Image 1: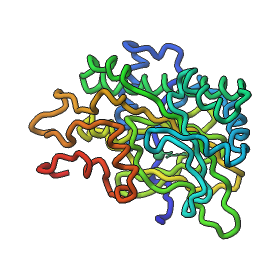
Image 2 (image 1 turned 45 degrees about the vertical axis):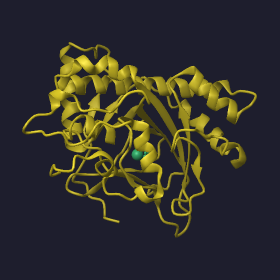
Image 3 (image 1 turned 180 degrees about the vertical axis):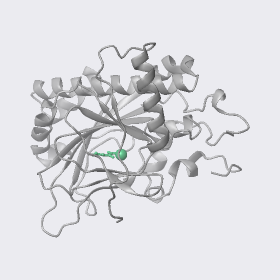
Image 4 (image 1 turned 90 degrees about the horizontal axis):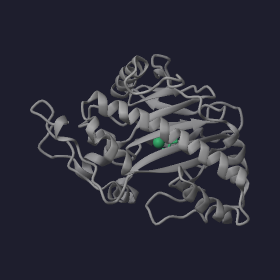
Length: 317
Ligand SMILES: O=C(O)CCC(=O)C(=O)O
Ligand SMILES: [Fe+2]
């Protein structure tokens, strides 16, 4: 694994402003910074005060449940259920909550984990998930506006579902490797990532250098997934990232929330983003079918799964 350098630092963008409304100068400033950061790094840190860290206490309780309960977290969608007990990433354990920004989605999950209910968990998780979805929606609006295709924003938002993946990374013991989660790009349209007070997320810069992200309590990483890379015709690229448990401060809890397009719509580059200088790079695709493709063992280690899945072959990347 490459050594870390201090040459990169993710841009930090303020989303706490009370008047951060479309059309204001504060909005335009944040929009410029956000789109610039997405084009340069594929991600940035958003300062965002609508979130409360009480959710991590609830996550501790969740991961304390017996393993036979946690594995009840299943889904018909690929890669949506319990993940853990994997020999090459022994520190990692996670569960998925589909439609996490809705009461129904949270209750479906909670009822499996706690048949007698758990209101404190439901309340904290729903509040977090809604706030993170609102943040992502602001960023998506900024991107659509910035590329002059805001007329597609409303229909995009209507076609999005959110999957929240809650994660626990235990501390490495003794000589155990520090790898929390392997390098990958997200398969989502976009993702938001929040953590307790233990850092560990690392991003790969355009120059190939890995660098760590230090997050303050009211901050969330906003990250491009493969789907926005296709949609934007690669103006924005999904960054490679991984988790390394280098800090010795106990377990790391994090929540990554991923947006996926509904089954009934295709992820498709707007015609306005295709021209002679920007030939179409990815054919329209069904988001969940792409997830299904990626879930196959033989496709997990592809350098760019999206390119293999739906890249336009005559174009040089
Ligand atoms: O835990 C984190 O910070 C990131 C997790 C992640 O990259 C993922 O679940 O896709
Ligand atoms: Fe990720």
